[in-house]
Length: 116
Image (cartoon, rainbow, N blue to C red; front, side, top):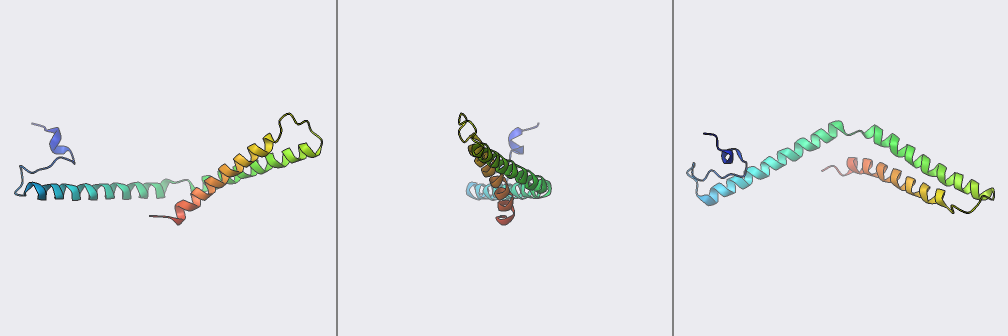
């Protein structure tokens, strides 16, 4: 008969072994730690193989350049005596774009520098 509890990694085999309950619990705890360590290692290897580093670099450069162009266009608009209805919307939007692009570039570099 199939028993779901016997295939669960948190299930203790106290009744099927010669170990005391404390020893069995310690072995289960060590097994869980090793299992999670192996899972984290597999996940890190998968991220290392599949992380789109070039895409993130190009995308962050594109976003930063769009942000700077928004700022420059807003300054040109003010210099040509433009209407002040949308006061500094290009500057605020440009700063947000520059911040987002910089954050993407920093996260990309942070991943490489702080590898655990």
